[in-house]
Image 1 (spheres, rainbow, N blue to C red):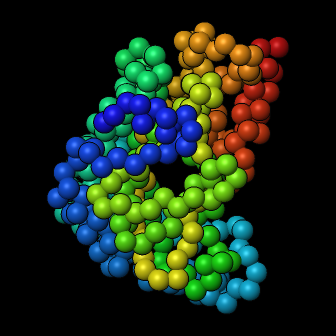
Image 2 (cartoon, rainbow, N blue to C red):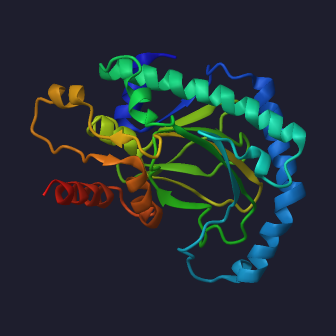
Image 3 (cartoon, one colour):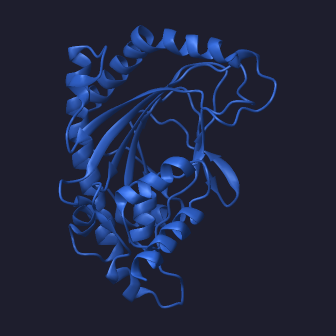
Length: 294
């Protein structure tokens, strides 16, 4: 992995795409095949029933309170829930467990690469995320089925991610992911066997704004079922998040300092404000910080 292009992408885009990531391509093919089979076998009918019950195929105005997606969440760290998820075949469980191990390694390699680019000591970001029980790490498994009204229903509404570093394995045939750059929505094209990386709000705070989380969304498509496996390597619930002192020392121009908080407190706020701008969330955490120090 080359440092300079990644540093540039983190500063100016908040997104980049990895091809030489070291994860077995055979494993990726297996995970994709089993994920799509699981959707057809265990989730497709439920999704169709939900669509019918809400009358979504006949809407004639924009829907702003739900997303055109079928999802479930696998937690890997600090404790796995994979054995508790119903309807997962043994082959699928084993493939996802193996895939999660590889993604965890990749996430930690990337965090150390970011440390190098930022001039932070090796291991700083992993330690900042650790808390008392280690990081939170999990995978949101999503399918975005064909949508009859893609102009009225988003696959996933625009948002920034709350956490740390996100590793996305997406469908290489059906597109839909977009990010906001300079006020314009830009397509993130599907690329075979790639892992798309994006930065969450916590890295923006720790770098005091040098790196930015970025608004992104999924556009529903009239044809094709888009697979998305987004794995979130996040701080532990009780991890104390604040700008790295080394980042504050390097700033030559006057700029505001980001807030300090416990990660779980931020997540409680985020859960109700996910689809709104991040800046008011940061301001709210600053206000909580002020009250706590009074």
